[in-house]
Image (cartoon, one colour):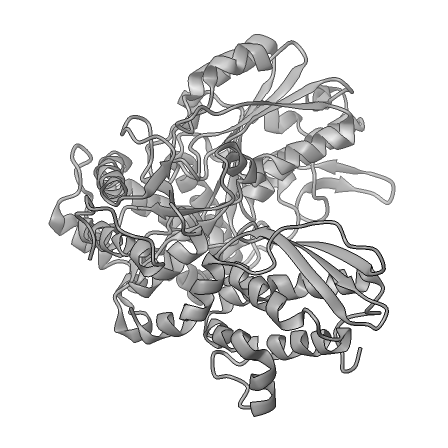
Length: 442
Length: 163
């Protein structure tokens, strides 16, 4: 797929099959020769040739240490590395120097949390005071968070004496924006929230969070892992202060993610990991630090993965995020219809199409999610089972585990039909009677 | 369904999952040493709490448990209950070790008649070994038993021959 697809429509059958041809793994078969139906892109996406080639090409053609050395290879490697940063920055609507490479999104969120810790200890001087927390200050999260956007804040609260508060979710799994006024107050210093739940698929309205944060002078940290691969995202337009996302969920490789930070905030923030490559002047006594983003990129970076993440951003942009979002809206409807057509299956999350991703978590009455996943796997259908790193959200719905089907740009109608067929046989397999209205029973 | 699925979900397992034995926690009667263990499979949130009573003669008098999880994990505790109640602690330890060994055969089985006789219904879990992600499910109860026996004072450490 090399040509740019018009971004004004959903993907045609021809465009979709051209896209699928870019993903070699989608061709493979499973046990007993079954075709793969990959509905686990919410956990990690598959990778197109251009991403695999970018990583290989870096090692074959350009491998050298970046940001040092005067030789041609070092220059080319540095250019590839910084070009990837620019691609990723453009992809999310920010400036190049506002993107910090991290090993994954979890590391990006931890970077902010530990920088605040360091500021609390007085590191970073006067300019870093805005990141310091005092006992009794408040950190606000939501009940919908992935553990990656919850546990680092619990830990920050424990280290600083700050208090963790949270906004709940409603019965549809949507974040209770109406609780913001009650939960956010004058002591709130940070509001960390997800752009889209990795369990319910609900998309969070960002504007009220940003408005409330500005009202009380709090920082906003957006977990954009699930949104960035599936929706057009413009972080400047959203107005958040920080955002984290990973490469591997947006068709890129594992081992690389990004932290977006507003330029003036990154400039004022003390470093977290220290060592080589992030310094200006080092004496035996003390060190001054490089400006961002290098200040936050100590040690040898994951250069080939960053380059490949840049290639993934370009690949997605070339298809067009509007077209991808439209395609996935269509898939969302099919997924919800598929689940609704099978008796004894309940969705955890919104069942309407408004503001939600093609991420559908569900429980099958009388059958544990693990067993559901096993029966689907037997039909070649790959779904995630468990708590999806969101135990509090599962507890909110009174379940320990769910099965989750997620679609991506390369998902087809036929795959969702295969999922529906396999799902319709689950209860019967475990000896639970299929109600008379079970049209979908195999 | 493929044959590996039929091997994984044998009727014995489905029956135990549906009608588990030994379920329900309680208070140990007098005159026994009791231990309790709570084990979680962090990848899926499955959990089991298991209580074991051991009498003066070193015999497992009772196993009670409560848990929630997939059919493999729940059936495995139910089978464990049937296997170890009224057995000497040393036999319970041996059964645990044999079951662990079975789980490592990748679905092939132990090819050991004595072991198969000892494991009884637990042989139904042979097919679980083919699915590496499910081995932990089958072992959850056995890990809890091992820990509960240690806590009861009846077993000094991890399972070994003639504990």
